[in-house]
Image 1 (cartoon, rainbow, N blue to C red):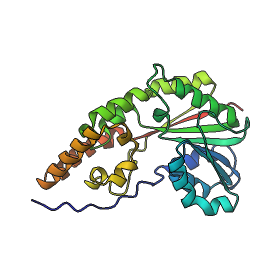
Image 2: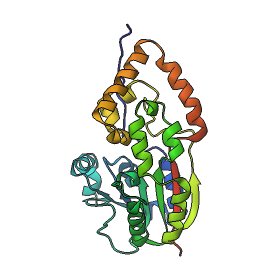
Image 3: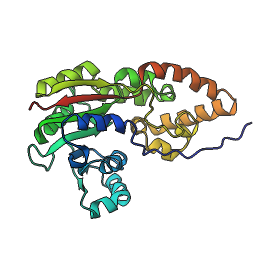
Length: 271
């Protein structure tokens, strides 16, 4: 039996930040002058990347423990006055109308839904972001589409229940585009970075499933039951021990390179 050696994975990478930066620049405001909202900032990976580029970032997160982690990592930016962290609901924003040049929403929307048909929390959240955007500002929504959830991640076949929950809680790509238009945004298109994965460091290794820290950094695992997680871990351990995991991942990666793992949808508030 082969010994499994886990590689620690950095689960806080702000993947695709260059795409986000490009959309912020498209508003006509230079990055060093931009005022950005990170809605649902989690542990602050995108917040940290943004605050290094723009003039000021407000970041809001409902989970106090996640926000505490973010505050520990980002304290120097708060002290410098370039960052304000807020504990609160990302669909009930404590900000003024027209306050921000851009709102960044990374892998958040599906976690707002509670199972009610019609995805009402998507509408509430995106309407709030519209309210706090200045005219000409953009909302940049990073989500995994239904197809990406099913085909874009090598380990998702081992957690079908979690994938099904995430799919139910997410809008289809066409429905999301229609919702943006219905709220009043001008749809500015979507970008699928086929060359990127949400967890770049060690994603294609057993550790992305076997390491509890890595699982904690991938939001899909929040939808997996304890039993499903246990079975997935055991399956990956078995494949690794039998020397079959690398071939399995390679096969799944061929599919992933066709569909990607995530998509940036961009809506602009009319000037």
